[in-house]
Image 1 (cartoon, rainbow, N blue to C red):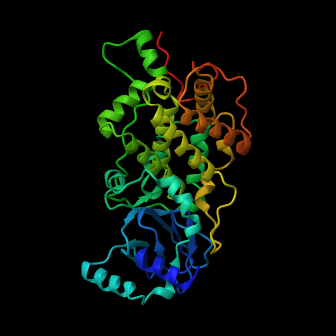
Image 2: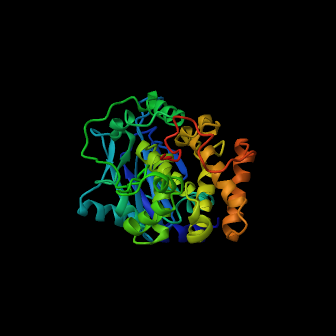
Image 3: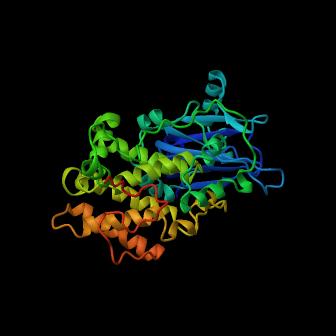
Amino acid sequence: MDPDTALGYVKHGASLLLLDVPQYTIVGIDTQMFSVGPAFKGIKMIPPGPHFVYYSSSNREGSEFSPIIGFFIDAGPSEVIIRKWDQQEERLVKLSEDEEERYSQAVKQLEFDRQLGPYTLSQYGDWKRLSNYITRSTIERIEPIGGEITVACESEMVGKIPKTSMERALTEQLKDSKFSRSADKSQNKGCYYTAIPRVIKHKGIHGQDLTSLNLDKTQLLESILMKDYGGAEDLILGELQFAFVAFLMGQSLEAFLQWKSLVSLFLGCIEAPLRTRSQLFAKFVKVFYYQLKYGFQKEHTDPGGAEKSASALLDESWLSADSFLHRLCKDFFALVLEAPVVDGDLLLWTRKLKELLEDTFGWNFEQISVADGTYREEDDEYAPVVET
């Protein structure tokens, strides 16, 4: 990149100034991670728009790390976002307005330019594919009070997780030494995710009618779209992406459970993808495809050599035949690929998703059964509810 082009990105891109961050701290933005050195004071040339910033403090040897803390930002052109390390709380905090203005002017006058690492623009495409439905309103609607997302505030959830093999594997990873420090009681009440009921119950509806409602999640999807999203399809996709990023980069258990609920809602629909919401499902499968494609890349490293440890949560347990993804995808592929009439984009991305799962994960979708739940395990919380 020539100097004039680089200077243009410096002036028009946003900057993230991080003051007094201890050496060896891992700092990430979107798909990129940095290991803090003695001169590091943040990141420059950040493209305007939504981003996810996350960090994990280290002991003096750089061998043990605290739970990741993350937060979303919506950066404007040339905006300077400033955080300062609080030594006592071991986290980044905001400055007073006067201090923020003073440091902001210093950044714009390039006084910190040599101490700001450049945003790796070649990786921006990956981030856009993971976040293209996340907007400022998405962030403001879902983010917790204070904006910080961290598994350290989710310890009460661990005992409440349904004990399928997938959840057991994830819970054990969250109890790993990396997360062993117990957090103080916090005012953080978690993110404001949309409630997704697992089982549909209606007064006055019994037997076969109730079974039909639970076998096909179309009516539930329609209800949630209208009640919680005002009928705006892109909003539910924004929440799906928000939850995935908070899970993958921020290692949030709460985010994983919300992402799983949304994926299960979509993949549990029969009528919607073929008749009423074909375009929404084409967009969903494309989002889902890029999430899995990025999440299961074998190596996530950045130019600074910092390993993307967040993806460690996506281990081999996801690839087993009892994974909730495997079972739900089986039915969804049968539905779409065997339908006599189907939307072209939905068919294209469903085929791409199937090929990704088969080629990358080695999954076998032969002998696909009808979506009646007959092959599901007893502990599958997302199996259809059958009323007799």
